Image (cartoon, rainbow, N blue to C red; front, side, top):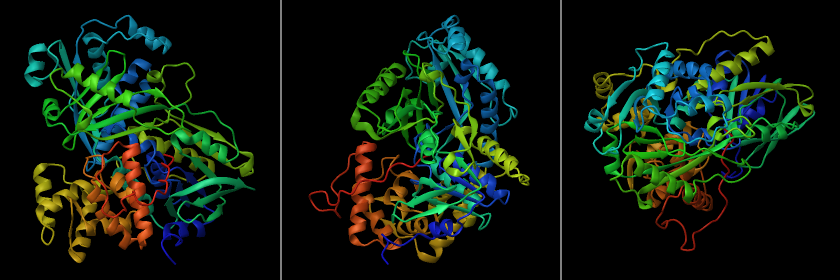
Length: 587
């Protein structure tokens, strides 16, 4: 049996457990978070995701874990309080991926917005683009600091006048009057954090199962029909409860389940990633977070040696392809010029672009920027499921995923009459367990685990996996650590380890989500070919399948992410196979 028709082991596990207590549809961060919560309670739970894990909305984030200071103006005080609390918690339970992020707001007015802000607060439809001044920002940050239940996690905000602001950020627009600096948090490897959350659930035992590229396609007499995207095989699952965590696709999933809903009304957010040493240096390690002249909140964010610029907030149709447009790129170039007027940006410096739809509730005529970022859980009983309950998650964001998952799990447990036995508040995630938190402790950890695998390589593995790096190190010690041509990002054996342990199905799973190679501009034509060779051996692809994977991956890189690639050495001169790339996953 070849790789194209072989049933994956995790799919077989899902198929064999045809009557799970809970079926979760959607493997984004909220879906895997809920999976972890229920698995820890011992609930028999299955998760299916039609694409790869965290390949939908969860893959298009601004890489921030933040309380959302701007939501104060929307009156979403509960959300901000919860988000600040969860931000502080993630700094402790996921320290391998979530780090403090110093953020500076350049301010060009003093009292501006004092009249417009209350109107925006009251109506959420005010189209004023009056810039918020220092008075309003100071007030907002004071309230923001007060929401932190653990003030020692990040420092409180500070304000500086023009002179000190320009001393600290000399390339800043000379018209700046003040800067306000506060701390939120960043998540450098969001997709890997999602994999860690999923892994925690899977590690609880055989009562918890998950499969990617497995799509819910219909219902029949109380059963959910699912299809393996790789083989085309279909089978039925008959859960007691269904949880819909499909993000922006929630209404489409409910339609599949036999129910018409109109819960969602997401907005598109795009970003670009620049290889621009001058701009990187100008940021001085800080994120610049500010209001553009059109009233949108935007950011310039140094990340892993590159600079990410975002984001837009545009109404979007989830049924249409989501792309970062040329108009959005023009917008980003203009906003950088507003903050750093003497730093030139051009398209040749863009190494990656991405766009996604936020899983926001339907908002009618409310401006996109004022649509609530809060979440709610809606129960229903679709006819096709014979009256079984579906819990649909409407809303939710990266920062609050643990709280959202806890809430979803509690609703489900109450419905089932099942007790909660384990709390995830304060419970370390994956490679965050026993993670060395200081430079000295990290140095000691690296030296203690170095040997056959040299210390610089161990340091890279610790950054990618947290303390789960011990498993990878042991694998490399046993199997070697041969370099791949064109990259020192990972070795052939590390790619093989990913293939064996992280449910890799397609080439793009490795380059877009198991690593940050594409985001960082490191996924060259040579690297794509080299990783494909390793995966072909590890996953038993024949030559035709390998070439199709390369062609699909290149198509996604160029058409979706704007990556410029040299010709592939493994494809024919006419471009080789042109099989269509898999769709992004729900979630």
